[in-house]
Image (cartoon, rainbow, N blue to C red; front, side, top):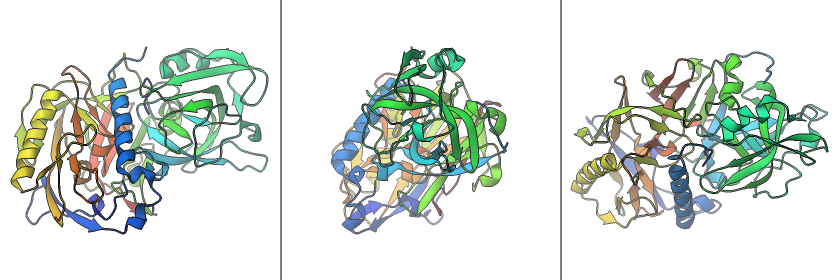
Length: 459
């Protein structure tokens, strides 16, 4: 979730098992329709149509919020670290999740917590005891009293004022009690555009990920939390300000991180989140192509880039919105939002090619307005969207990112993109369109890199 803001059933698209048509270009891909037992999704609430609709509604609120400006010491140096990154479907979220270790008890053991990975947020936070208002999470609540390395951030620390204000939009405030002790400490209040929030003590503790221990890591110990975080324990902030994980570990990992988002929701496959610039972790099949990373002082946590052109199924599209600057790339938004002129052009060309292939139209689903009935089809030929970025890099959306299955029987499958209400709003490239890509964020050299990669590793 950004500050200030499917296991399919009997029949579903299996993007992780797609194959390229004989002699076809990268512009189109054939997807096979697989059949699975309904029992495979019986324990997945996020696979139901109603739940999917609610999640997309929440995604709409997040995307809308991103249009508005937002009013540590480390040990055992290590050049890179890597942690598994999985679909959050088992946590009832369409975002991606990783596991971190927080704190150390008297035996040296840490709490293992699953958190959402979000490039549109800065402050990392987890739900903590004693929690006054907490949503239901699958992991036990983190107990700061059990951690020998936990400490509340004092009120006179810079992290409590300027850093926290830049990260959340509001400086910390001082109060006594809660979060493991009666001394005066710094409290934070973080709100999100969909109405979600986290409030609690700003603290430091040891955080472990990928074999690296980060001592004195500043995070939020949430005592009052509410919102659409599924059953996760909190959120990892990968934004750009001082309190983000990227900034706090810059001296260790060089301000570089990357991820590979898996296309499948299978429990035995996972993508990866890599900290540092060691490309030996990558499994990309194409070279990483870079474009300029743009910063917006009015929205300091966010990562922007310029999109100069687009094509669908190999056919170029033209629109007044192409060439506009400051397109936001965000792992915490699910569905990409395009400028109205660009979305109309992309939708028209996609519909022209898809309808010509004989697929009948289906009703709209939530914010998705271009849907089809694929009942009875064993495979579909999907036109792919390619974006031309500033500097000449081309990024082609994986077939897994083109179609969203609204109904498990394939009778309602939609183009997984939406248009913004107004032309001058900020376009967003969401996580659904980033699947099976190695996406590299180099904050020191101000570059965003993209490469094709099969992100469904079997662990």
